[in-house]
Length: 439
Image 1 (cartoon, rainbow, N blue to C red):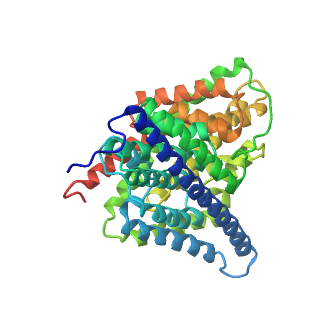
Image 2: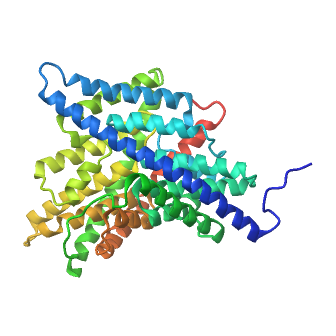
Image 3: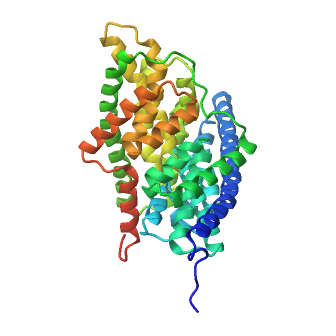
């Protein structure tokens, strides 16, 4: 006798069942994602303590942090080799599943992403926590849908909804997480996806705050909103940011192509080599590697960085992020994007200050915050998600107008340049790799 999916005969009952599944799965990703973030914070403190010890210890003590980063990356790559879906961000797989191009993830992906992400990101690679958290949410949502005996389409829907809850937990941004599910994953605002996603996001963030506390990710230095007269300056900034986003996406794909071309090198060895290089960057300046939250906080908190330091950190992190992603370990792209966008905003303001007959020092922090959203929009091509995420992460609504202008211009330039959004490119690579005979 054929199995009839639960709720398939009654749309209202089906929506209620979806909401019930979303609530349960939202609680799960709230605590799992909260624990993941808590462990990463602990790993960050340990890494900084280790770097401080290596700086004070005699002899070649600097080799110890380098070795730790290399071993962490290699160990994470081994986990990804045993479970290939664990490699990289995982957001491209969530999107492919939502489109029916791939099967939903299974529950064993959760420990693989958790442990692998902790080893790679906690070890210092320039990767983001959001990729593993989103993918873990998708796996939990899909498993909850299967256990509730939902139909295939509804299982995909629950994985998409809980993936959005995962992003909300990763950045403590409930509305941004929900918009991510609508704008980036499903490309729809249908009631059947909106209501379960909002419920999942609400309970997930509430549960994660029990673990992490309730406060924005970044404490932004207070200041008056930029005058409307400066809006053209933000628009020009957005135009240039669009070009920067195109270059960043191409660099990500370029490093992945180089890694694929080095097929004879075992993945763990390749990851260890990349990890050792990132470890050397950590020794030179701890701000040059890692997820980038500390650096972003320093910038938006009003810290003063000399122009040479801004330029160096921007160039280093612009390359180190794509290079770290090519290591093939669990880890995302979002968080490093925010640090690059903030640095780019500072650099743009300093250069404009040297050219224009006006004191632009007061625009440094606003431009950094706007740069976070605009660079996200240029690379991911999800402008609403980027704007709302940054507003929630920084608790700054007064920058909405310049943020909207700059992000719109960045997305427009990236589109006109003919560059695909980064997750479209990564999804295409993943689908090609699944075909028979693919290398």
